[in-house]
Amino acid sequence: MENLIDTVLNFFVFAFVGVMVWLYFKEIPENDGSERQSNEK
Amino acid sequence: MFRNPLLLIALALTAGVAVWGIFDTQGLAGFAAAQVKVAFRSRGWFVMLTASILLLTSLWLAFSRYGKIKLGREHEVPEFSTISWLTMMFAAGMGVGLLFYGSAEPISHFLFMQDYVGQEQAATEALLLTYFHWGLHAWAIYGFTALVLAYFGFRRDTPQMVSAPVISVFGRTRWTRTVGWLMDLLSIYAIAIGLAGSVAMGVFQVQDGIAILFNIENAGLELALGVFVVLCLAYLLPLTMDLSKGMATLSNAAIFLAVGLLIYVLLVGPTSFLMNNITEGIGMYFSKVIPQGFMTYSLYDETVRNRFSDWTLNYMVWWLAWAPFVGVFIARISRGRTIREFLMGVLLVPTVFSILWFGVFGGIGFFEGAAGNLDPTIVQTNINQTSFLLLDTLPLSFLTVSATIVAAFLFIVTSVVSAAFVLSMFSTGGNSNPSVRIKLIWGAILGALGLVMILSNSVEAVRQIIALSASPFVFIVLFLMVCLLKALKKEKV
View 1 (cartoon, rainbow over the protein chains, first blue to last red):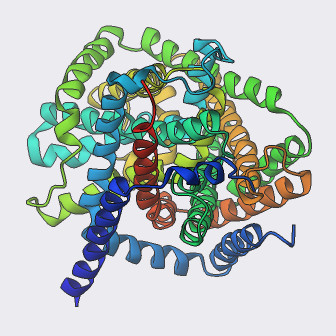
View 2: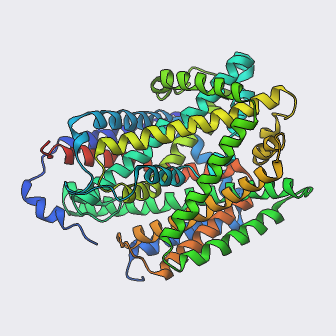
């Protein structure tokens, strides 16, 4: 059981790191700029 | 207020923990300890790796071409002088912890390590480990969070919210709004719990200081609760008015007292012994700091691994818990500085001060312990008293103990007032002028959480509760790093 929890917790970390790497290289269309600048509450 | 789900849920979540803790303090502490044990055993490596990555990325950014980028418009100049900037930053980031752990932490590591490496080596290693906990890695966590908030706030005019960089970089979509909202919620939660822990530690210390000063035997929970009531009265008034300048003065007064104590102990204590300690410590620290950041002690016995969790991992997540709060504050006072200037200031100056502080207070702890004037096992029986008992071995102890109590009290008041402001700002969508009512509500919640920590009557329990609440921030800070690096790619430098 301990090993299973360990694996699940670490799998989540690996998945998170994978998503971060993917987001870093993901192209964001330039025309999103205006929307991005108007980030107000 | 009732149309703001983030505020309502954040209030409900933190108030829920406070109620749980008040009615079942041991249950909450036990739950936190069990969860933290599992999380640290599985993800300890990830916490250490994150702290090291933040430090290495900060150093790379400072010396890269991006170092020239200004946090603000190109023509802007820094609002505060460099000395004021560094003083305020340090007061916000460390505060009462320095007074609490100044002597206690090195002595505690020494007692543990002497069984493994012998007394001489243990003293050096104990100081090294203490410097590691309070040095470059801690400030990289603060500094990087602050840098991201400052960069997006001052160059892209986003609100000072943890979610703002995500929405700024990836656009306002359903997933960024959801993830951003969750990030804001977790940040609010981590700040509230982290701050409450510091309140409790400060109250424990003031309580024991008063007990020593006035020879009060068996100063128990009653005295701690008395100190807590006075503290609540002291911070409620500043919350009802704009006292940003007054708070800066109080914060500077606390730092002034702390620096005064440092200089006094250095000069009145065994000066050459302490300077030898500091010199050796500087060399040891800078030669080992990077490898130490990757140490996880996986091949050591369980006692060492538990010690690593209880201290090193706990510290790293504690800095993470404070990162959004301190980050917002450091960002606000750093407008107009370049990334290089910012990172060098944030990383190096507080680290050098920490080395001096722990070198002096840790050093005198070893010295008086060896001379038989202090029983080192006090850190195991009543850690709160360590600093006071050490000051008691020097002349004018009534004055120095009083100064420590006043400084601890000032650090707590300024921290609570600043945290209530930041929490109000975060929970109202980045409003830089939140209403008095919301600030008072947060002040009350911080008080209730502080009370929970005090009722636990254990510094260890306090640390476990903080660690549990701060754990998710390790993911948030990495996400913020990706946002910053992605944004910098588009800078023309």
